[in-house]
Image (tube, rainbow, N blue to C red; front, top):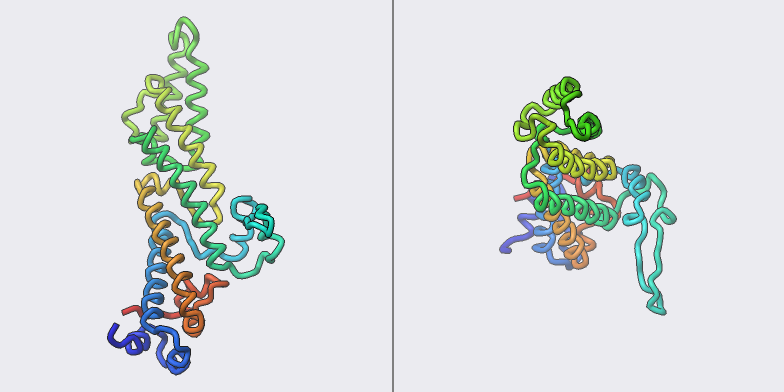
Length: 279
């Protein structure tokens, strides 16, 4: 980089005194690249909010509620005897304490794992989701009830011979809920396929509830066929955070001078608190 000081002056807020940055002895070119990474992380956050509802900038209270999940609350390390010891984050923080980048990374890793598992299941067993275009979390149980009611009307030996009028009524209601799902109408002829697809949505509902505090709207993601892209963007965000932490070991002082603090993700995401003009 030919003139990192000139570029840094453009990136940081107007009037920033660059003297402390120069006096730090830390590589300004690496600081410039790292602040550009912060900008990419912010753009990644915007995409996730707009397309999936996920907001990685977790407020302290939202993160604290996620500590009810053991995979987020507990960390492990080996003691002197090489025995694995678990530590509870709940024991060391208050609900209003800032969320650190390390804490955010833990959440994103678990969210990525859950969504990736769903995506693998979707690829293997649900190449075409007939109900997805109009499916919502509120409709999962209603659609399941329709399937159960139809199965009860299928009398052994006579089928729907004596219950056909009731079956038609249920099918009409089901079609009104999912008018575009032409491949599964009439419902009684596609009960097994619909029941299998609904099992997938029940799993999606569990994941959606688990991560509700992040703003995730998984059914919206499925409606727009953006599950794979959401996973990719979570991965890119995680990689960006890793790069930020890795570079930060060499530019600790200048990152803090720029306003970025690893123990508080608001400094990473809030463009009003830490304005950056990336060039």
